[in-house]
Image (tube, rainbow, N blue to C red; front, side):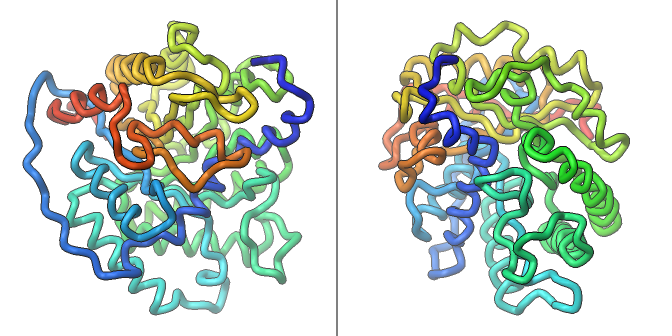
Length: 378
């Protein structure tokens, strides 16, 4: 994996923003565009010992249409307890002097209704940075095209949007910043500016929703210095310390098939070493492992190895007493092809048509275990 063809290296440098690109693609697929039948909960068979972590999927659909978006929410409800909504900022709705539109408020109400009908716990992730450059902000209005996060208007917009989300959704978890160590690697100055805004966001969210846990996510393979398109470096654990007391848990995004095609090659302490760096809860905010060859031989594996990795992941989450595990794509996103998005084309536990892969029974079995949070859980 380290011998990447040179032609792939500049394109794979976009991976640090891969999840942001998928979020932008998924953002238009909201349940409220068409009338959908009310969700009918199916009683879940409860078997086995309690697990200490919630299971969840993101709202990323298999196709870019409303029905697929609803299917993603249904899968999260039928086979877990948690939903990840991952989106770029809606800048124009929250700039100083602007009130959120009635359309946005209506969409929010409808989406919240869909989440509540499914009795899902919500993890909402606000991802400010560009897919192609973690050092620059994403989807900015034209008049702010070359601005950074410390622009007074943009910083205020981010704080206002976080406050709106905390007030409207009352999420259990709010991630402000996704794979933020990649922002540090791309632009240390912008990262320091992000930290200033993060502190304001943290305080604003706590003011309106004190029970919401606030944190960023870290791209774990990049944090370890193990990504195949970068010069190797020692783990940058110091990034975990940058947030001081305004860090409610440590959340990672991890896609180890980028560097290991077989699960047994993953070091035994791959995740447990995090416990040596923090006493905070350790959560898996976005996880994936490929089940097929990836473009250019990157992120390549097989269905049996995906199954083996999932078993390993769940065992590690149990040992760490993690609060939640989010498998990023419940079904393969059929609309992705080119790099960098194509790297996630086969990470679903079902294929794009909803046919289970070898790993699906492992997830389904875990989902049947009753969720029982530890007595000291936040």
